[in-house]
Image 1 (cartoon, rainbow, N blue to C red):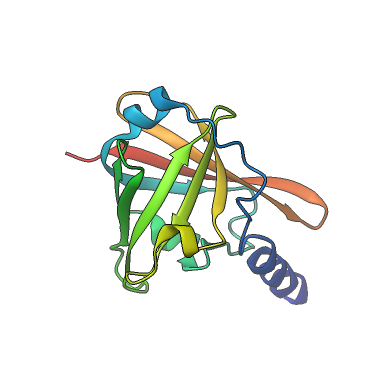
Image 2 (image 1 turned 135 degrees about the vertical axis):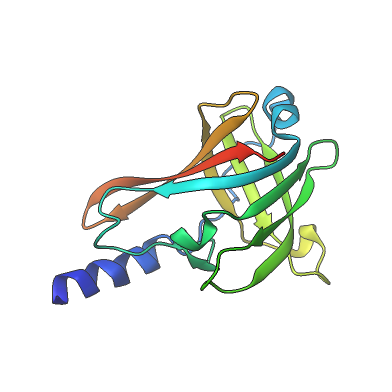
Length: 158
């Protein structure tokens, strides 16, 4: 039991925040335009999910993001996201985002009254398996010296 609690604590610390300061800002317009529209996260998977909890984007447990709705506007790199799952925190926020030439998705979750340029912290995830109706965002983290991937599976909403 102590090991499970330790792993949970480590996962919460290690997945809590990533800086966007080291990212390339040259945009991948094709990837961005393909993301334009409304999306739903259909699953969040990672090795050891039965033992550890991941606090996604410092908002809620990663499983609370299953069913969350996301809107991406590619011409101004804005949008919004909302958690909609029963028995999870109610959360909705504007976002700013872009995809760079390195295949990195850079995300800032904004407060309603704060402009994006004043938000200094954000998240960098890798874009994978992008099609017309689906894509994945992959976050890397370290648990007990092992790198794990947290995979957010997006499906286009109707």
